[in-house]
Image (tube, rainbow, N blue to C red; front, side):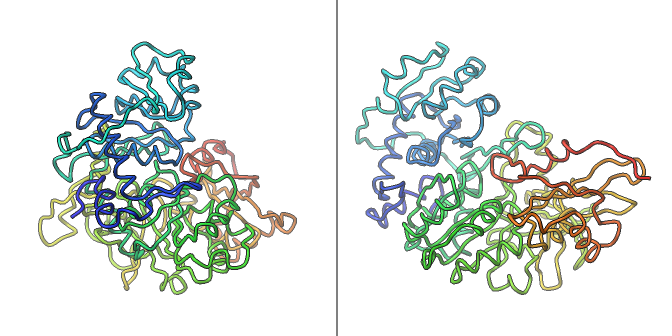
Length: 534
Protein backbone atom coordinates (compact mmCIF):
# COMPACT_ATOMS: atom_id res chain seq x y z
CA UNK A 1 0.00 0.00 0.00
CA UNK A 2 1.28 3.46 -0.89
CA UNK A 3 1.65 5.50 2.30
CA UNK A 4 4.40 8.05 1.69
CA UNK A 5 4.92 10.47 -1.18
CA UNK A 6 8.12 8.88 -2.55
CA UNK A 7 6.33 5.51 -2.74
CA UNK A 8 4.27 6.90 -5.62
CA UNK A 9 7.47 6.43 -7.63
CA UNK A 10 9.07 3.44 -5.90
CA UNK A 11 5.96 1.26 -6.07
CA UNK A 12 5.47 2.02 -9.77
CA UNK A 13 9.17 1.24 -10.29
CA UNK A 14 8.63 -2.17 -8.69
CA UNK A 15 5.64 -2.90 -10.95
CA UNK A 16 6.97 -1.48 -14.22
CA UNK A 17 10.64 -0.48 -13.92
CA UNK A 18 11.14 0.17 -17.63
CA UNK A 19 7.98 2.21 -18.18
CA UNK A 20 8.53 5.91 -18.90
CA UNK A 21 7.84 8.07 -15.86
CA UNK A 22 8.91 11.49 -17.16
CA UNK A 23 9.26 12.93 -20.64
CA UNK A 24 11.08 16.29 -20.88
CA UNK A 25 11.47 17.41 -24.48
CA UNK A 26 13.42 14.55 -26.12
CA UNK A 27 14.63 13.00 -22.86
CA UNK A 28 12.86 10.09 -21.18
CA UNK A 29 13.35 8.67 -17.70
CA UNK A 30 11.98 5.31 -16.66
CA UNK A 31 10.45 4.65 -13.26
CA UNK A 32 13.54 2.68 -12.26
CA UNK A 33 15.83 5.54 -13.31
CA UNK A 34 13.71 8.15 -11.55
CA UNK A 35 13.53 6.07 -8.39
CA UNK A 36 17.31 5.67 -8.39
CA UNK A 37 17.85 9.42 -8.87
CA UNK A 38 15.44 10.21 -6.05
CA UNK A 39 17.22 7.82 -3.67
CA UNK A 40 20.68 9.16 -4.56
CA UNK A 41 19.57 12.73 -3.92
CA UNK A 42 18.12 11.64 -0.58
CA UNK A 43 21.61 10.39 0.34
CA UNK A 44 22.98 13.80 -0.63
CA UNK A 45 20.43 15.51 1.59
CA UNK A 46 21.55 13.31 4.46
CA UNK A 47 25.21 14.19 3.84
CA UNK A 48 24.25 17.87 4.12
CA UNK A 49 22.78 17.25 7.58
CA UNK A 50 19.18 17.58 6.43
CA UNK A 51 17.05 16.08 9.17
CA UNK A 52 13.48 14.84 9.38
CA UNK A 53 11.11 17.81 9.29
CA UNK A 54 13.65 20.24 7.76
CA UNK A 55 12.26 22.36 4.94
CA UNK A 56 13.83 22.25 1.47
CA UNK A 57 12.85 25.01 -0.96
CA UNK A 58 12.66 24.11 -4.66
CA UNK A 59 12.80 27.18 -6.90
CA UNK A 60 12.95 25.65 -10.38
CA UNK A 61 11.04 25.34 -13.61
CA UNK A 62 9.31 22.04 -14.40
CA UNK A 63 12.27 19.74 -14.94
CA UNK A 64 13.85 16.50 -13.75
CA UNK A 65 15.69 18.18 -10.88
CA UNK A 66 12.44 19.68 -9.59
CA UNK A 67 10.66 16.32 -9.44
CA UNK A 68 13.74 14.56 -8.08
CA UNK A 69 14.18 17.19 -5.34
CA UNK A 70 10.58 16.96 -4.13
CA UNK A 71 10.38 13.19 -3.86
CA UNK A 72 13.84 12.85 -2.29
CA UNK A 73 12.53 14.92 0.62
CA UNK A 74 9.95 12.24 1.32
CA UNK A 75 12.58 9.49 1.43
CA UNK A 76 14.25 11.05 4.51
CA UNK A 77 11.18 12.65 6.06
CA UNK A 78 12.10 16.22 5.07
CA UNK A 79 9.48 18.71 3.86
CA UNK A 80 9.50 20.06 0.31
CA UNK A 81 8.47 23.65 -0.37
CA UNK A 82 7.86 24.15 -4.12
CA UNK A 83 8.26 27.81 -5.07
CA UNK A 84 6.59 29.13 -8.20
CA UNK A 85 9.41 29.93 -10.67
CA UNK A 86 7.74 33.19 -11.75
CA UNK A 87 8.05 34.68 -8.26
CA UNK A 88 10.64 37.41 -7.74
CA UNK A 89 13.42 37.62 -5.15
CA UNK A 90 11.44 39.49 -2.43
CA UNK A 91 8.60 36.96 -2.59
CA UNK A 92 11.03 34.04 -2.50
CA UNK A 93 12.87 35.61 0.43
CA UNK A 94 9.59 35.83 2.35
CA UNK A 95 8.79 32.15 1.75
CA UNK A 96 12.33 31.02 2.62
CA UNK A 97 12.22 32.97 5.89
CA UNK A 98 8.62 32.17 6.77
CA UNK A 99 9.14 28.40 6.84
CA UNK A 100 12.84 28.50 7.76
CA UNK A 101 14.11 26.81 4.60
CA UNK A 102 17.44 25.14 5.37
CA UNK A 103 18.34 24.10 1.82
CA UNK A 104 17.34 25.86 -1.42
CA UNK A 105 17.61 24.24 -4.85
CA UNK A 106 17.54 26.63 -7.80
CA UNK A 107 19.30 27.59 -11.04
CA UNK A 108 21.99 30.16 -11.73
CA UNK A 109 19.74 32.90 -13.12
CA UNK A 110 17.37 32.77 -10.15
CA UNK A 111 20.27 32.64 -7.70
CA UNK A 112 21.83 35.72 -9.29
CA UNK A 113 18.56 37.63 -8.90
CA UNK A 114 18.36 36.55 -5.26
CA UNK A 115 21.90 37.56 -4.25
CA UNK A 116 20.85 40.93 -2.71
CA UNK A 117 18.27 39.10 -0.56
CA UNK A 118 20.43 36.21 0.62
CA UNK A 119 21.78 38.07 3.63
CA UNK A 120 18.22 38.36 4.92
CA UNK A 121 17.58 34.61 4.71
CA UNK A 122 18.69 33.89 8.25
CA UNK A 123 17.97 30.14 8.42
CA UNK A 124 19.22 29.26 4.94
CA UNK A 125 22.40 27.18 5.19
CA UNK A 126 22.93 25.68 1.73
CA UNK A 127 22.01 26.41 -1.89
CA UNK A 128 22.37 23.82 -4.64
CA UNK A 129 22.56 25.23 -8.19
CA UNK A 130 21.47 22.75 -10.84
CA UNK A 131 23.00 24.33 -13.96
CA UNK A 132 26.39 25.75 -12.94
CA UNK A 133 29.79 24.26 -12.19
CA UNK A 134 31.77 24.98 -9.04
CA UNK A 135 34.05 27.22 -11.11
CA UNK A 136 31.11 29.23 -12.47
CA UNK A 137 29.73 29.72 -8.97
CA UNK A 138 32.98 31.31 -7.79
CA UNK A 139 32.04 34.53 -9.58
CA UNK A 140 28.89 34.97 -7.46
CA UNK A 141 29.30 37.03 -4.28
CA UNK A 142 27.15 35.64 -1.47
CA UNK A 143 27.07 35.72 2.34
CA UNK A 144 29.74 33.52 3.99
CA UNK A 145 27.05 31.96 6.17
CA UNK A 146 25.58 30.20 3.12
CA UNK A 147 27.27 27.27 1.40
CA UNK A 148 26.61 27.29 -2.36
CA UNK A 149 27.19 24.01 -4.18
CA UNK A 150 26.97 22.78 -7.74
CA UNK A 151 24.56 19.95 -8.53
CA UNK A 152 27.31 18.60 -10.79
CA UNK A 153 29.77 18.27 -7.90
CA UNK A 154 27.96 15.42 -6.19
CA UNK A 155 29.58 12.04 -6.70
CA UNK A 156 26.56 9.77 -6.59
CA UNK A 157 27.16 6.27 -5.32
CA UNK A 158 24.79 3.36 -5.28
CA UNK A 159 24.13 3.03 -1.58
CA UNK A 160 21.06 1.81 0.23
CA UNK A 161 18.67 4.41 1.63
CA UNK A 162 17.27 1.96 4.17
CA UNK A 163 19.39 3.38 6.98
CA UNK A 164 18.22 6.96 6.38
CA UNK A 165 15.68 8.55 8.74
CA UNK A 166 12.13 8.38 7.41
CA UNK A 167 8.70 9.81 8.03
CA UNK A 168 7.00 7.76 10.72
CA UNK A 169 3.35 8.33 9.92
CA UNK A 170 1.18 9.21 6.94
CA UNK A 171 0.05 12.19 9.02
CA UNK A 172 3.59 13.63 9.09
CA UNK A 173 4.18 16.91 7.29
CA UNK A 174 5.31 16.29 3.69
CA UNK A 175 5.02 19.64 1.90
CA UNK A 176 4.16 23.30 2.32
CA UNK A 177 2.38 25.03 -0.57
CA UNK A 178 2.16 28.80 -0.51
CA UNK A 179 -0.97 30.59 -1.61
CA UNK A 180 -0.67 33.29 -4.24
CA UNK A 181 -0.88 36.08 -1.70
CA UNK A 182 -3.31 38.28 -3.63
CA UNK A 183 -4.37 39.69 -0.26
CA UNK A 184 -1.62 40.37 2.23
CA UNK A 185 1.27 37.96 2.72
CA UNK A 186 1.04 34.41 1.34
CA UNK A 187 0.16 31.60 3.72
CA UNK A 188 1.92 28.25 3.76
CA UNK A 189 -0.56 25.37 3.60
CA UNK A 190 0.75 22.23 5.29
CA UNK A 191 0.15 18.92 3.50
CA UNK A 192 0.64 15.51 5.06
CA UNK A 193 1.74 12.41 3.18
CA UNK A 194 -1.85 11.18 3.51
CA UNK A 195 -3.20 14.38 1.91
CA UNK A 196 -0.96 14.03 -1.14
CA UNK A 197 -1.29 10.27 -1.63
CA UNK A 198 -5.08 10.18 -1.14
CA UNK A 199 -5.43 13.24 -3.37
CA UNK A 200 -3.64 11.31 -6.11
CA UNK A 201 -5.83 8.25 -5.55
CA UNK A 202 -9.03 10.29 -5.57
CA UNK A 203 -8.33 12.10 -8.83
CA UNK A 204 -6.90 9.00 -10.44
CA UNK A 205 -10.09 7.13 -9.55
CA UNK A 206 -12.62 9.49 -11.13
CA UNK A 207 -10.42 10.27 -14.15
CA UNK A 208 -9.91 6.50 -14.56
CA UNK A 209 -6.15 6.91 -15.00
CA UNK A 210 -4.12 3.89 -16.10
CA UNK A 211 -0.50 3.11 -16.93
CA UNK A 212 -1.36 3.66 -20.60
CA UNK A 213 -2.05 7.37 -20.10
CA UNK A 214 0.24 10.15 -21.33
CA UNK A 215 -0.41 13.23 -19.21
CA UNK A 216 0.72 16.71 -20.28
CA UNK A 217 1.79 18.79 -17.27
CA UNK A 218 1.62 22.52 -18.06
CA UNK A 219 0.71 23.87 -14.61
CA UNK A 220 3.27 24.93 -11.96
CA UNK A 221 4.23 22.16 -9.56
CA UNK A 222 3.90 24.74 -6.76
CA UNK A 223 0.16 24.87 -7.53
CA UNK A 224 -1.83 22.08 -5.83
CA UNK A 225 -3.65 21.39 -9.11
CA UNK A 226 -0.33 20.96 -10.95
CA UNK A 227 1.24 18.89 -8.17
CA UNK A 228 -1.78 16.60 -8.03
CA UNK A 229 -1.60 16.03 -11.77
CA UNK A 230 1.98 14.78 -11.35
CA UNK A 231 1.27 12.60 -8.30
CA UNK A 232 -1.85 10.97 -9.75
CA UNK A 233 0.13 10.17 -12.89
CA UNK A 234 2.99 8.58 -10.95
CA UNK A 235 0.56 6.61 -8.77
CA UNK A 236 -0.72 4.57 -11.72
CA UNK A 237 2.60 4.32 -13.55
CA UNK A 238 1.60 6.59 -16.44
CA UNK A 239 3.92 8.87 -18.44
CA UNK A 240 4.05 12.53 -17.40
CA UNK A 241 5.22 15.00 -20.04
CA UNK A 242 6.58 18.18 -18.42
CA UNK A 243 6.11 21.31 -20.52
CA UNK A 244 6.96 24.95 -19.91
CA UNK A 245 5.07 26.68 -22.70
CA UNK A 246 5.16 30.22 -24.08
CA UNK A 247 2.18 30.09 -26.43
CA UNK A 248 -1.02 28.08 -26.62
CA UNK A 249 0.20 26.66 -29.92
CA UNK A 250 3.10 25.06 -28.01
CA UNK A 251 0.54 23.10 -26.00
CA UNK A 252 -1.36 22.03 -29.12
CA UNK A 253 1.89 20.90 -30.73
CA UNK A 254 2.85 18.89 -27.63
CA UNK A 255 -0.55 17.17 -27.57
CA UNK A 256 0.06 15.85 -31.07
CA UNK A 257 3.78 15.15 -30.64
CA UNK A 258 3.47 13.05 -27.48
CA UNK A 259 0.08 11.42 -28.04
CA UNK A 260 -1.34 13.12 -24.96
CA UNK A 261 -4.37 11.46 -23.37
CA UNK A 262 -5.04 13.91 -20.52
CA UNK A 263 -4.62 17.65 -19.97
CA UNK A 264 -5.37 19.89 -16.98
CA UNK A 265 -5.48 23.68 -17.19
CA UNK A 266 -7.02 26.83 -15.72
CA UNK A 267 -9.55 29.06 -17.53
CA UNK A 268 -7.05 31.58 -19.01
CA UNK A 269 -5.13 28.82 -20.79
CA UNK A 270 -8.34 27.15 -21.92
CA UNK A 271 -9.44 30.49 -23.40
CA UNK A 272 -6.17 30.72 -25.32
CA UNK A 273 -6.44 27.12 -26.48
CA UNK A 274 -10.00 27.67 -27.66
CA UNK A 275 -8.66 30.32 -30.05
CA UNK A 276 -5.56 28.42 -31.16
CA UNK A 277 -5.23 26.62 -34.47
CA UNK A 278 -5.85 22.89 -34.04
CA UNK A 279 -4.66 20.85 -37.06
CA UNK A 280 -6.91 18.00 -38.11
CA UNK A 281 -6.70 14.97 -35.82
CA UNK A 282 -3.95 16.53 -33.66
CA UNK A 283 -6.05 15.86 -30.54
CA UNK A 284 -7.26 12.40 -31.52
CA UNK A 285 -5.40 10.81 -28.60
CA UNK A 286 -6.99 12.94 -25.85
CA UNK A 287 -9.59 11.10 -23.80
CA UNK A 288 -10.18 13.76 -21.10
CA UNK A 289 -9.42 17.33 -20.07
CA UNK A 290 -9.99 19.03 -16.72
CA UNK A 291 -10.62 22.56 -15.51
CA UNK A 292 -10.14 24.06 -12.07
CA UNK A 293 -9.11 27.42 -10.63
CA UNK A 294 -12.17 29.31 -11.84
CA UNK A 295 -15.31 29.13 -13.92
CA UNK A 296 -14.83 27.91 -17.50
CA UNK A 297 -17.05 30.02 -19.80
CA UNK A 298 -19.58 27.89 -21.63
CA UNK A 299 -18.51 29.38 -24.97
CA UNK A 300 -14.92 28.33 -24.27
CA UNK A 301 -16.06 24.85 -23.25
CA UNK A 302 -18.06 24.52 -26.46
CA UNK A 303 -15.04 25.48 -28.55
CA UNK A 304 -12.79 23.02 -26.71
CA UNK A 305 -15.27 20.20 -27.21
CA UNK A 306 -15.32 21.00 -30.90
CA UNK A 307 -11.51 20.79 -31.08
CA UNK A 308 -11.40 17.64 -28.92
CA UNK A 309 -14.70 15.92 -29.80
CA UNK A 310 -13.82 12.53 -28.29
CA UNK A 311 -12.43 13.96 -25.02
CA UNK A 312 -14.48 13.94 -21.83
CA UNK A 313 -14.46 17.27 -19.94
CA UNK A 314 -14.26 17.25 -16.14
CA UNK A 315 -15.13 20.51 -14.42
CA UNK A 316 -13.62 20.59 -10.95
CA UNK A 317 -13.88 22.78 -7.88
CA UNK A 318 -11.40 22.84 -5.06
CA UNK A 319 -9.37 24.75 -2.53
CA UNK A 320 -5.72 24.20 -1.69
CA UNK A 321 -6.67 23.59 1.94
CA UNK A 322 -8.33 20.32 0.84
CA UNK A 323 -7.09 19.68 -2.73
CA UNK A 324 -10.19 19.03 -4.85
CA UNK A 325 -13.65 19.08 -3.28
CA UNK A 326 -16.03 18.27 -6.13
CA UNK A 327 -16.23 17.52 -9.84
CA UNK A 328 -18.94 17.49 -12.46
CA UNK A 329 -18.83 14.29 -14.47
CA UNK A 330 -18.82 14.56 -18.28
CA UNK A 331 -22.22 12.87 -18.47
CA UNK A 332 -23.83 15.74 -16.55
CA UNK A 333 -22.24 18.73 -18.26
CA UNK A 334 -24.98 19.26 -20.83
CA UNK A 335 -27.72 18.75 -18.25
CA UNK A 336 -26.18 20.91 -15.49
CA UNK A 337 -23.58 23.19 -17.12
CA UNK A 338 -23.50 25.57 -14.15
CA UNK A 339 -22.98 22.91 -11.48
CA UNK A 340 -19.69 22.13 -9.72
CA UNK A 341 -20.84 18.54 -9.36
CA UNK A 342 -20.62 16.25 -6.35
CA UNK A 343 -17.93 15.39 -3.81
CA UNK A 344 -14.82 13.61 -5.05
CA UNK A 345 -13.79 10.23 -3.58
CA UNK A 346 -12.45 10.52 0.00
CA UNK A 347 -14.32 13.78 0.61
CA UNK A 348 -17.62 14.75 2.20
CA UNK A 349 -19.19 18.13 1.52
CA UNK A 350 -21.50 19.89 3.96
CA UNK A 351 -23.45 23.09 3.33
CA UNK A 352 -23.95 24.89 6.59
CA UNK A 353 -25.77 27.90 7.95
CA UNK A 354 -23.96 30.36 10.20
CA UNK A 355 -25.17 28.47 13.28
CA UNK A 356 -23.57 25.24 12.02
CA UNK A 357 -26.80 23.50 11.04
CA UNK A 358 -27.28 21.90 7.63
CA UNK A 359 -28.94 23.85 4.83
CA UNK A 360 -32.02 22.58 3.05
CA UNK A 361 -32.08 21.82 -0.67
CA UNK A 362 -31.41 24.95 -2.76
CA UNK A 363 -30.61 26.97 0.36
CA UNK A 364 -27.37 28.94 0.13
CA UNK A 365 -24.76 28.23 2.80
CA UNK A 366 -21.03 27.85 3.28
CA UNK A 367 -19.31 24.84 1.74
CA UNK A 368 -17.49 22.85 4.41
CA UNK A 369 -15.14 20.02 3.40
CA UNK A 370 -14.42 17.13 5.78
CA UNK A 371 -12.39 13.96 5.40
CA UNK A 372 -8.76 12.85 5.02
CA UNK A 373 -7.97 15.36 2.26
CA UNK A 374 -8.27 18.28 4.70
CA UNK A 375 -4.75 19.60 5.19
CA UNK A 376 -2.91 20.32 8.44
CA UNK A 377 -3.54 24.07 8.51
CA UNK A 378 -1.33 27.09 7.87
CA UNK A 379 2.35 27.08 8.72
CA UNK A 380 3.00 29.04 11.94
CA UNK A 381 -0.27 30.93 11.58
CA UNK A 382 -2.48 29.78 14.42
CA UNK A 383 -5.07 32.54 14.05
CA UNK A 384 -5.69 31.81 10.35
CA UNK A 385 -5.73 28.07 11.02
CA UNK A 386 -8.25 28.44 13.84
CA UNK A 387 -10.46 30.59 11.62
CA UNK A 388 -10.60 28.14 8.69
CA UNK A 389 -9.97 24.69 10.24
CA UNK A 390 -12.50 23.61 12.86
CA UNK A 391 -14.10 20.51 14.28
CA UNK A 392 -17.16 19.49 12.30
CA UNK A 393 -20.20 21.19 13.90
CA UNK A 394 -22.40 18.80 15.89
CA UNK A 395 -25.53 20.37 14.43
CA UNK A 396 -24.70 18.84 11.05
CA UNK A 397 -24.83 15.28 12.43
CA UNK A 398 -26.92 13.12 14.69
CA UNK A 399 -23.75 12.08 16.53
CA UNK A 400 -20.73 13.93 17.81
CA UNK A 401 -18.25 14.02 14.92
CA UNK A 402 -14.83 15.39 15.86
CA UNK A 403 -13.30 15.16 12.39
CA UNK A 404 -11.46 18.27 11.28
CA UNK A 405 -13.25 20.37 8.68
CA UNK A 406 -12.10 23.23 6.48
CA UNK A 407 -14.55 26.09 6.01
CA UNK A 408 -14.12 27.17 2.41
CA UNK A 409 -15.44 30.71 2.58
CA UNK A 410 -17.55 29.89 -0.50
CA UNK A 411 -21.33 30.19 -0.67
CA UNK A 412 -22.92 27.27 -2.53
CA UNK A 413 -26.25 25.46 -2.71
CA UNK A 414 -27.23 21.84 -3.35
CA UNK A 415 -30.22 20.76 -5.43
CA UNK A 416 -32.56 17.86 -4.65
CA UNK A 417 -30.38 15.49 -6.70
CA UNK A 418 -27.27 16.32 -4.69
CA UNK A 419 -25.52 18.52 -7.25
CA UNK A 420 -23.63 21.57 -5.97
CA UNK A 421 -23.78 25.08 -7.41
CA UNK A 422 -21.27 27.81 -6.66
CA UNK A 423 -22.87 31.13 -5.69
CA UNK A 424 -20.04 33.39 -4.54
CA UNK A 425 -17.04 33.80 -2.33
CA UNK A 426 -18.17 34.69 1.16
CA UNK A 427 -15.89 37.73 1.13
CA UNK A 428 -16.81 38.88 -2.39
CA UNK A 429 -20.58 39.17 -2.07
CA UNK A 430 -21.54 42.69 -3.15
CA UNK A 431 -24.00 44.57 -0.95
CA UNK A 432 -25.90 47.10 -3.05
CA UNK A 433 -29.26 48.81 -2.55
CA UNK A 434 -29.97 46.48 0.38
CA UNK A 435 -29.33 43.30 -1.68
CA UNK A 436 -26.56 40.71 -1.49
CA UNK A 437 -25.34 40.07 -5.03
CA UNK A 438 -23.11 37.29 -6.37
CA UNK A 439 -20.43 38.57 -8.81
CA UNK A 440 -20.34 35.10 -10.38
CA UNK A 441 -23.98 35.35 -11.46
CA UNK A 442 -23.33 38.64 -13.26
CA UNK A 443 -20.10 37.35 -14.80
CA UNK A 444 -21.98 34.37 -16.25
CA UNK A 445 -24.36 36.74 -18.03
CA UNK A 446 -21.50 38.84 -19.38
CA UNK A 447 -19.68 35.76 -20.65
CA UNK A 448 -22.83 34.85 -22.55
CA UNK A 449 -21.86 37.50 -25.10
CA UNK A 450 -19.63 35.89 -27.74
CA UNK A 451 -17.58 39.09 -27.97
CA UNK A 452 -16.61 38.87 -24.29
CA UNK A 453 -13.44 36.88 -23.69
CA UNK A 454 -13.17 37.48 -19.93
CA UNK A 455 -15.25 39.31 -17.35
CA UNK A 456 -14.75 40.21 -13.71
CA UNK A 457 -17.29 41.96 -11.51
CA UNK A 458 -16.04 43.96 -8.52
CA UNK A 459 -17.61 46.34 -5.99
CA UNK A 460 -16.86 50.04 -5.65
CA UNK A 461 -17.81 51.99 -2.51
CA UNK A 462 -20.83 54.28 -2.90
CA UNK A 463 -22.29 56.74 -0.39
CA UNK A 464 -25.85 56.19 -1.62
CA UNK A 465 -25.90 52.49 -2.52
CA UNK A 466 -23.28 51.02 -0.22
CA UNK A 467 -21.46 49.39 -3.12
CA UNK A 468 -21.67 49.83 -6.88
CA UNK A 469 -21.33 46.99 -9.36
CA UNK A 470 -18.45 47.49 -11.80
CA UNK A 471 -17.84 45.16 -14.75
CA UNK A 472 -14.33 44.79 -16.17
CA UNK A 473 -14.38 43.36 -19.68
CA UNK A 474 -11.76 41.87 -21.98
CA UNK A 475 -13.18 41.60 -25.47
CA UNK A 476 -12.34 39.15 -28.22
CA UNK A 477 -10.73 40.21 -31.48
CA UNK A 478 -14.17 41.32 -32.69
CA UNK A 479 -14.03 44.46 -30.54
CA UNK A 480 -16.03 46.75 -32.80
CA UNK A 481 -19.21 44.73 -32.27
CA UNK A 482 -18.95 45.12 -28.49
CA UNK A 483 -20.13 48.35 -26.87
CA UNK A 484 -21.16 49.41 -23.39
CA UNK A 485 -24.69 49.72 -24.73
CA UNK A 486 -24.78 46.11 -25.97
CA UNK A 487 -23.36 44.85 -22.68
CA UNK A 488 -25.93 46.75 -20.62
CA UNK A 489 -28.70 45.44 -22.85
CA UNK A 490 -27.54 41.86 -22.23
CA UNK A 491 -27.57 42.50 -18.48
CA UNK A 492 -30.97 44.21 -18.49
CA UNK A 493 -32.49 41.27 -20.35
CA UNK A 494 -31.12 38.70 -17.92
CA UNK A 495 -30.74 40.42 -14.54
CA UNK A 496 -32.87 42.46 -12.15
CA UNK A 497 -32.10 46.18 -12.16
CA UNK A 498 -30.12 46.13 -8.93
CA UNK A 499 -27.69 43.59 -10.46
CA UNK A 500 -27.02 45.56 -13.65
CA UNK A 501 -23.48 47.04 -13.56
CA UNK A 502 -23.32 50.79 -13.03
CA UNK A 503 -20.09 51.05 -14.98
CA UNK A 504 -18.42 49.08 -17.77
CA UNK A 505 -14.63 49.26 -18.11
CA UNK A 506 -12.77 47.73 -21.05
CA UNK A 507 -9.30 46.28 -20.40
CA UNK A 508 -6.78 44.74 -22.76
CA UNK A 509 -6.03 42.01 -20.21
CA UNK A 510 -6.72 41.09 -16.59
CA UNK A 511 -3.96 40.92 -13.97
CA UNK A 512 -3.15 37.45 -12.69
CA UNK A 513 -1.44 35.96 -9.71
CA UNK A 514 1.41 33.46 -9.86
CA UNK A 515 -0.98 30.53 -10.44
CA UNK A 516 -2.67 32.20 -13.41
CA UNK A 517 -5.86 33.14 -11.59
CA UNK A 518 -7.41 36.58 -12.07
CA UNK A 519 -6.28 38.89 -9.26
CA UNK A 520 -9.69 40.31 -8.34
CA UNK A 521 -8.43 41.96 -5.16
CA UNK A 522 -5.87 43.94 -7.12
CA UNK A 523 -8.57 45.12 -9.51
CA UNK A 524 -10.81 46.04 -6.60
CA UNK A 525 -8.07 48.17 -5.07
CA UNK A 526 -7.30 49.81 -8.41
CA UNK A 527 -10.92 50.79 -9.10
CA UNK A 528 -12.07 51.49 -5.55
CA UNK A 529 -12.63 55.25 -5.72
CA UNK A 530 -15.88 56.33 -4.04
CA UNK A 531 -18.38 58.01 -6.37
CA UNK A 532 -21.81 59.45 -5.80
CA UNK A 533 -24.89 58.53 -7.81
CA UNK A 534 -27.33 61.38 -8.35
